[in-house]
Figure 1 (cartoon, rainbow, N blue to C red):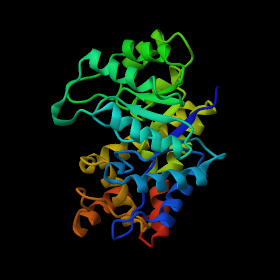
Figure 2: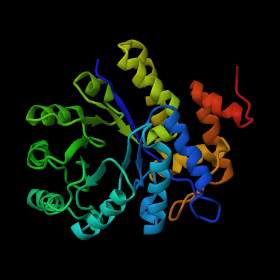
Figure 3: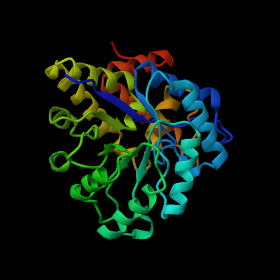
Figure 4: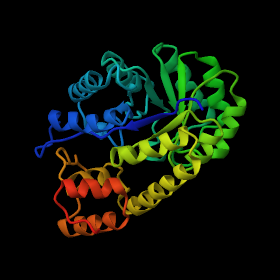
Length: 312
């Protein structure tokens, strides 16, 4: 079975005053690197990069490349922007930071903007004529719009610098259609949900932000699958599905459950940047109790390390 990649849109650690906590950030990255999980730096969601200045983004790229280069993939995931000009600016920051691949979203769906197919395709045409660095496409759905598999395949054929497609918000049906339409070998990365089927259908790995929370468990899932132990992999997949279902309540802002877990398990860097807020202590207590009831080994391990009582 070919090697499968596990890629994480990693979180960013902040100090209580809201500044980037470089030491805590290094510890966050090290947790992922130790599990051979590739990095996607400066993600708008899990990484809170929409709330960062250019200088802060440069710091994130510098530290991530310094920590991970030569050990795991170190890529950039700049936040989506409404115009090509702004998108190019963020892409250049990532390239200057030394990342291997830059993930590119389509035009931001702000204020209920719903692009036409022509607008979506033209956005990438204008962008990729100026970007020769390796890129990944992210055909995420926005409000009322989903780029077709046909269009994404066409962009892959038209631009040789496209080296991957990230199907974070797409289904296995979309995966099958895109794979059928591709006329060259472009790695396709599956979201966690539905990944059992997409891996079986030929996905090159799994990408998401959830690995920030349970890196060892995600690594175990993909290693079991990659070694052909599909039944055991499915059992871990089920554990992770239960975990994902549990944290859904707090996922109105993706950084929130990540930072909540960091706080309750006493990991540094758990501060959220506005407009996100940490729930009150009583809700955090209920959140912790629910996590421990899942009886996932990695959660129990983090709880013990934090001095919390774990049922035998």
